[in-house]
Image 1 (cartoon, one colour):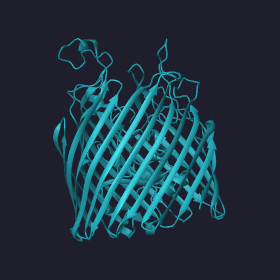
Image 2 (cartoon, one colour):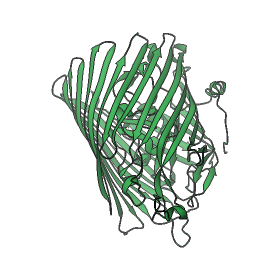
Image 3 (spheres, one colour):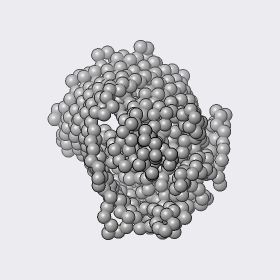
Image 4 (spheres, helix red, strand yellow):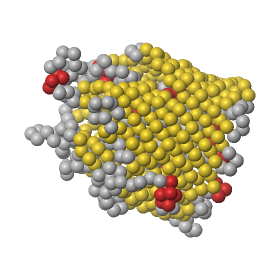
Length: 635
């Protein structure tokens, strides 16, 4: 059932809220709750002290929704659009408020994991599975002051399972459509001064054909593990070690001869991702300090066919950082730090590296009890592009009535990647991307915290956005053009793009057994360059999205639930560079879980219940109806 248009009004949002929900906004803390956000200022803040738009996904939500891919869960959160290139394991991009997928800054356990070996320096969410994830915070809007480069669209902060005080273990195994097997488990605990958590997972699936016209299934396989170790030397001084590893193999499709159209072929790719964090923390009263070394190492290889010589892509980022936090008064906090990052890129013919040194500072003040104001500044000294300064500020007013008013201004900065500068399609004339964002929001808690309503308006202007474009024959023969000897295209700056929209979110818990939430987003993202397709919609950005989720637990313990996701029309380009329209669509899923005693449960779900046929990316296939079932244990 295609969905071509739907209108967003406050009244309509209130009407559909009772139908079902997506991941709800963080409940405001004006009622005394202990919700804490760490992504906005890169330091812990109560939710009602944060002036930026943040959505939180917890482990309980992941288990209740029976989610395997983190991206699938994010796709039902406000202001977020997710596209996957075909089968499980195909490139998966997460766009925040209409920004590019490469402008989403991704952090896993304090490590910045955007891939220096990918053309746009983005993070591929295809390989991020839920086995080890305890919490995800999604901040929408530029936030370069605490996080630095690439946070133009926003920040996705992934936190894996933390050590527990008591020894605990959990695990699950499920099987379903396309011979899919997913097994995952974890154990955590503390012994004296040492605490640790270890998780592992395995996924295997025959998948579907990545090419929409194909018939051959493209399979996927991943081994993964995470670990966290803490050592308390004293009550105030300790060591933190964190590691994340994923090894994946993805079968793909390509452009086989003689037709050279996107279709079945024997190509495949492998990826080995290793992220590590080693840090010391030392707290002296109200003066808290942290020093750390982080590393992100990504090795990718693509193969035209089994036995062929691989095309290697190697990306590596090493970061040294210090962050301090000082609270001279109850009403004043100062957060600041210094960092140096070296990024390296290597393929079969190119080897490049670049460094960036940064300093930043933030001031968080409460001039009166209900009001929190945060302001900050950052300077990045890039080896190639020199110094760049960004600013940010936000305010949150938490009233005793359960109302939280929010407003923020944030800037973003992203230097061109090494691939965009020096590859065969590179352009050394590129300018860095910059962005400025304003948003205003309100959130209201009612019925003693059992109902939460929120709305946010935002406006973002991005300058010098980098895009890949074709080269005309005339440009290829013009001496001053960047297209000389570039018959297949080149990276270039778009002078200006704009994204503007509104986000609505509602969460209801009328009784303890029933949870209902909904969100609706309208995002208008356009190329605003005068004289060059002025006002045209950016690709793969549906204007309208909505998600509705409901879960209910019956008196004898059976939990049932469902999700409905609506995506409006969008545009994309085909293999020949032609602009094509993709119809909107609606997807529905149902699920159930039955406990068998205190430690075991069985569960199952059916995705795309109506077997809807749709496309999220031009020429790529999508999943039809698919059923899965499994067993879960907690010890």
